[in-house]
Picture 1 (cartoon, rainbow, N blue to C red):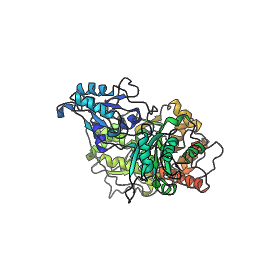
Picture 2: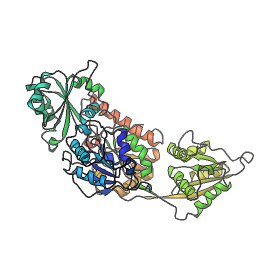
Picture 3: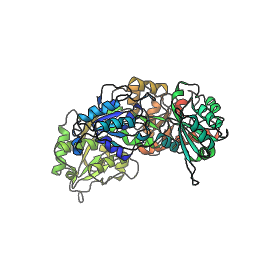
Picture 4: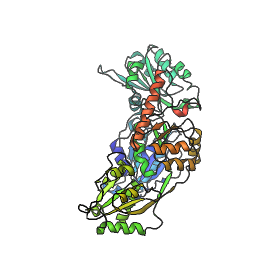
Length: 561
């Protein structure tokens, strides 16, 4: 969890010094060229690369406040973060901060949770103060507060119950005695293998063995898991769940003791772990640019999207035809321009920028767009489409709404169609039949992307992914070509009949079909499938599992229309 102020500080930083558990999440908010240190390894600093020429390492104006300014920030564990959880911070992290600050750099020191509760942050602040380096403390979300919120366990109610926070690693006997004698909520920071002992301490201090208890591991991430029990049964609950004994025994957990953690109440308040695709690892085989919004939507359903580019977009081999067409837009050669993809918009926009043109060059020209994403790309360019298919978002759907050429109302009979080199001729033939002349121009080439890393290929073929979204026939062919066929347990979701047919031709069983050719409706359809699957498991009294957790051959066929 990051505050807005933390994001602002990260965006202005020249140097990032972070705990391994928070490194991956905080670095996404930094700019290109920043130097990054991982406190667990004290490895050589790495520079975060980027394409923004204005975001170099020396662009932060540390001199505005008269001196370099390190900031002590907050964070929390996230998906994909370093697996070195529990490794203490590098002892000379303060020296790293001081060296960078004295070198004229603006430094961000990121710690887990809230700096005020970090055991070493205060010492590092004192070093900065003694060295005359000004600093700012950015409050964060304490793990003991954030994790219960994500587990669906409120800490207080209208009666104003007391809340006590206990660190089981350092709590003295007096602390256990006090919280044991209280009837308030107790939030205990422990590990998976010590939480039962902490429960025993509370019972020994006076708490009733039947007091409700929840234990949450990997809180606020899509690896989060929560067990509901009582102080007297938690050891048996963890044993029956087969989580102990295990190598994960040293992993930190947050336990909440009190009536607000009762099972019946949590069933109604568990908003995070009950998301339709919670914890699902979903493969998104798209180009990087096209995958972003789809991945964001999948995250809102609790999924962990994994983007694997299957198509690379490159300029045409002979750019002259495209150059002539763009110049024709300016000189009044065309009545219409039709965009059938986001890549077509991008290709024309790049050519405009090359010539010093902007959206004003479209003045007097009618613009058509196929698909919501294409239309959004045009709006972002400053162009509002005049025609978007009212029905099917495809070339055929566009032709259904396209007006025939009328020499009385149309002063020019020519259409500019920038498209991919492998596009079909459906739209060209249909426009010609309606009386239009078409300049069918290759604006970009689509080529098969390079194979993903070996680890990803093995996960695809070995059932490591819970679902894969196919958004075109080419993504099916290219993914199978560069990475292999997805495993039988993986849920296959297709954007339309043509894509589904291609998937079936490659030996894949299609489980989910989008009700219309839209990537967002496809994601919705997968979420509905996940909800139905979850409800069926709960109705049958079975544990809710992900597809990748099921044995091959045990999966039932199911298709969402």
